[in-house]
Every structure is written in C-alpha cells, then in structure tokens.
Amino acid sequence: MSLIPAEQAFSQLQSTADFLALTLEQPDQLPAFEFHLANGTRIAVWHTGVLLAEPAVPGQQDIVLSSGIHGNETAPIEICNGILSDVLAQKLQLTERVLFLFGNPWAINAGVREIEDNLNRLFSGHHSKDDGLTSEGGLSKERARAKLLEESVLKFYQQAPAGERVRKLYDLHTAIRGSRFEKFAVYPFLHGKDWSQTELQFLKACDIDTFLLMQSPASTFSYFAAQSCQAHGFTLELGKVRPFGQNDLSRFSATDKALRALVSGQPLSLSAFVEAEFNFYEVRRAINKQTDAFRLCFEDAIENFTTFPVGTVLAQDEGVQYKVEVEGEAVIFPNPKVAIGQRAMLLVKPVSVAGKVS
Ligand SMILES: [Zn+2]
Image (cartoon, rainbow, N blue to C red; front, side, top):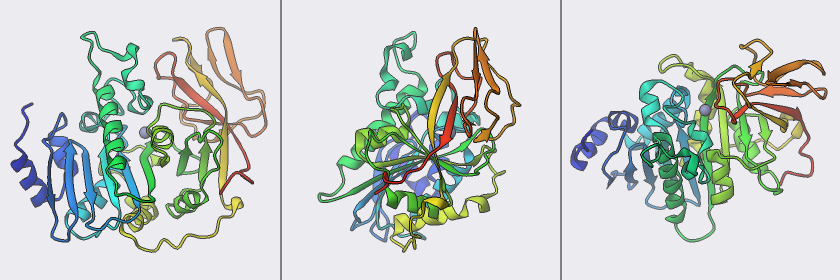
C-alpha cells in the first residue's frame, strides 16, 4: 500500500476527528505530521495508531492510553477513540499530555486477536529475540509493531517537560471469557516496591476493584511500562470480547468517565483506600503448554477466577496432570490454543496487601 500524503491525512483527520478510521485505512504506516487545535492543544501523529496530544501548558502527568493490542478487543478501542475524537473536536480540553495508541491495526481490521504473534508477549525486547525472526530475517508484523510501540512510549516520556512528573500507562483489554469479577487489572511485578494506593483508588473509580498482583517479570506492555519506564503501568481487563457495535458501552461508563477526568484535570473524588473493598490475588503457578497433548479438564465456558475443590484435575499434558493444590486457588486466562511453550493458564490465590501499599 502506498503512503498517503501528509496533507491528505491531515485534512481527513481535521474533518472527521476520527484517528481510528485513519489508522485502519492505513494500517501499515502513516506519514508523521502535526498541527495545533484552536484551543492550543498540539496534535502530533507519529505513526499509524500513534498520536500525541499535548495541551499548551501540560500538567505533571504523562499518560499513555493503549487499546487494540489484541485486535478483536473492541470495547477499549471504542472508549479510547471516543476520548480522542472529543479531544480532536475540542469537546474535551486536555490538561495532561496523552499518548494514544491503537496497538494492532492489522488485527483490528481482520477482527482477530493477532495476525502472527501475540503482541502482548513481545515487549521488553522480546520482539527481537532470535527465534522470532521470519525466514527472510525480518520481524513479523506484531514484532515490528511491539518495537515501534516501545520506541513511541520511550520517546513520549523522554520528551516530557522538565521537573517532577508522574508517568502512567493504561493498556485496555477485554478478556476472551467472562469473569466472576467483570473488570480486573493486572498489576505488573514491581520487584518488591509497594503497590500504589493512589493508583488503586483511581482504578476503583474506573469500576475496577479486582487486582492480579504479578510476582515475576513478563513480556507484557504494562510490565515494560513499569520496569523500563518507571510508569504506573496496568493491563485493564474490562469485560468480555465482543465484535464492534455489540458492546454495551454503558458497562464501561465509569471507566470512560474516570479516564476523561484524569486527562482533563477534573476532580476525581477518590474514596479512601479500604482493603476490604478490593479483591487482591497473586499468582501461585503459571501452567505452560508443553506439548500438543495439552488439554483443559473443565468446561470451556468457565469464567476467570473460577475455583474448584482441592484435588480437582484442571489440565493434563503429556505425562502430567495439573490439580488444584490449595483452597481458594482460582483459574484465570485458560487458553489451550496457545503455542507450545507459552502460558496456557494461571492459578491464582487471594492475598492481603496490608503493609505493601503506599
Ligand atoms: Zn487482550
């Protein structure tokens, strides 16, 4: 596909205020261009699906809003594009710098989770590990995209004004299956640092009160943000995957409202932190698919965070059975279709964060 001229992309974006549509029409690339809105906000398109919006006098937060890392997770894409469209149409005046990312335009167009590789397993440099090179020695679509997204986020944080800044990255997803807790967040491993009380309170305002506290490094976008950028990074799971137009956006109104308030400096009216109002889980075990014989031993339709009695066989692989080991151990993200060697399920348990939040 040939590159459209920057002037054409610019005039389309100005007339439609729809960066998602422009991205999906030009999934391979867009020319870089920038302009100012009449309200002083600078809009800089860096690439297809990568757009910086910066108010004339930026506040102290640098916020990345990412969606569409998995192409068929449409509700977050609609939420983020709605916020961005209102910024472009000057219905929403930003007070903070925001980097909007539509993660995987090819997969969004195809209505699938991924084209070749799971994009959310390719961050922190995993995109360029040797086993990922194509036969021509190049990177797959998702690997090239992961690299570009990392570079964009680093550039965004590095270009921030001087002084004390707060970096954030919210990577919005929906899960393949339903969940006992409709919305939850994956809080990446902080290498022993305390979990952020302010972030927990903010995400509660987004209607998210269940947190999976990770205990080891990962190749996800949110871990990259936390570890490589010292950002408050989260993977937000906002409900179940549905096609475009079939999302009940009223279920996401609290999230939408809180994100809009965050980027536009409106009061957030956060409630005091009370641990009993949250569900915290940590990972006990990650079960990786070892062979093609891997099978789940429960109904395919089970919800995330489902528990089973101790001793229940949850999955089997060649020569091995995985059973529930302790009371309360719950299953999340079961997916037998992953590639061999990848995570096919996580087993988590409830945990207290007393003394570990500040
Ligand atoms: Zn996802």
